[in-house]
Length: 178
Length: 178
Image 1 (cartoon, chains in turn cyan, yellow):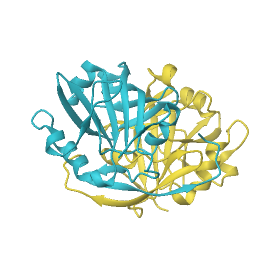
Image 2 (image 1 turned 90 degrees about the vertical axis):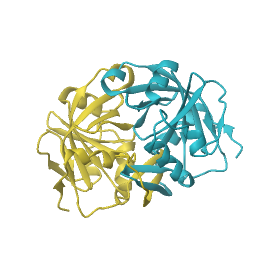
Image 3 (image 1 turned 180 degrees about the vertical axis):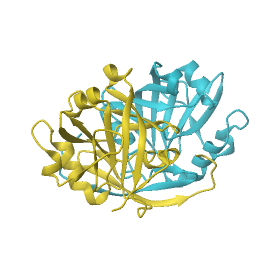
Image 4 (image 1 turned 135 degrees about the horizontal axis):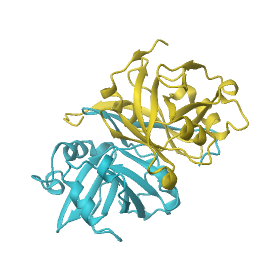
């Protein structure tokens, strides 16, 4: 798939519906990826995203020390990889190799984009004030990539213990809400 | 609909998929409700939720001063009310009356449950450290109510400017992830 750059003020529309994400990092030359559902928008412009990465996750120290990551948005056809990344630790598994994920260099951060995901957000950590108490990181999206052929992505939405709601139809209502 | 109390460790499954919420407050005897999409889980037990309520929202001062609210989860049949609550301000409109929402007293907080929503979470503000910078409130869920007849709620997921993804099918994959 050929991706194009998405204007940063439009990033919120990708994350607001609450999709499962794959967060990728690179630390000391080692790439890793984890599955993540606890995230929220914090600001439209520049796009700020808050997310929880547990100190038990192998990605925690990579994110804390490099302060860089990519938020990749997977869709239904990647469900097996999403679950695989969530049930294994980068301590013992090379998840890119094991789950057939293709890394691609990002433009502004030292963490890989996942080619198979329809959208990729290059992020920098900008606030760690709630890290100790809640493992909560504030990220600024520096660069966003999307596959323009995907209009209504069939994103996955975790309900717990292997149950995922798959994004259904899109409806349009008269609304001024951004 | 008759609701039952939901054990607090199960609350996360309601919010993780990222549904639009209706946040209700009561301040000086005046109830209000706003539409909200920027929220995330922060902890399983007790359930902690972070959410953004803009200082431009009429609900902001009610939430800041009373430190209590209810997070109500609407579904597809409430789409008109969700948009109405998002496009009007409680400064000039009684949203409960205007949009036909039925308030019901909560058990532990002084803010109304919305009867038409399939789930209601009574919440207390527990951390304001990121309020000034990001309008970010940390809430603890004290009591949760669900309609047990609703198994796979057709929640609404905002994509911007009146476009909502409606929750689709639920799939189950082998996973140990909570």
